[in-house]
Length: 319
Image 1 (cartoon, rainbow, N blue to C red):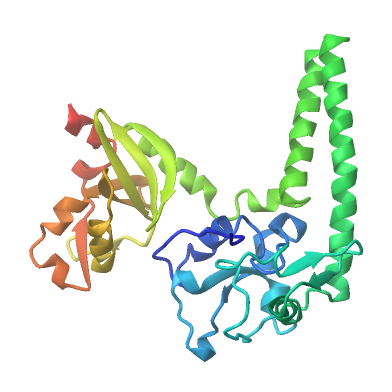
Image 2: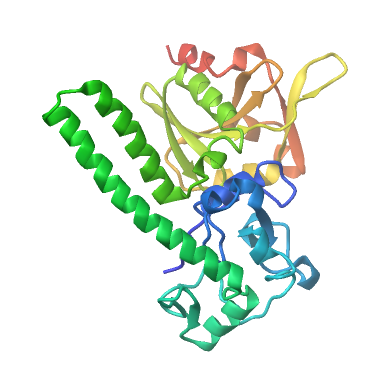
């Protein structure tokens, strides 16, 4: 089974939020060497890589984009190299099948494709090997420290009866556990991709009904339940346009409409727009967009952002 199983998304290389979702789909790791954001300087140490290089016919579509550390993606790494035999982290089970990690933290190939992979990404350069050694040593020390703090926490409550000390130790335990899972610089990833805006959108949706983060294919991020109805929600955070009369509107690719229409989902689909100017979320139902005259024959269509279509009014609509 491949290391990474990614979502189908509409994002392209130059889209503002492309890197954010690559980071999510690749579990905040480099697709090639598996170094974590938290082991380096957070997302700033990562780039969007065209797996099949543009110079060899690769596209800017999301399924050709991989999350890569600057070393693996740069001239000292893959750069514009590609071959038909190059292992693909989204298709091939690489580690343990084609490549193994030796006791000295050097990569050893099991197959010829594994050898090509190691050489392509220079996985045995001194800096990589040294980095793996440091991370492994640190992980071992943290595991021991975690056990020690858990024992201290149990003692603080069971023997000393000190809830204040317990709270402090629990916070330390949480921090150590996060470092073990995500790397020493894990905090650099926490709000690197406008998570504050996501929290605000979640809060606004909650005013209309019960919200769940589902992150389905084709950017259907939330499920919104209002009474007996369930909706899958697409959140558009692009720039809102204004016509000559001052009306706010948002353009939408009809390619998205056609794909959503063909999805085999039981829920209805809502297209939602976050307007940064007034910090509100507006909605329109997919079925209503599809009823716009000639919409499916255009490259893009638009809908107006009106007060009646603020998302909290969905609850009123159902009463």
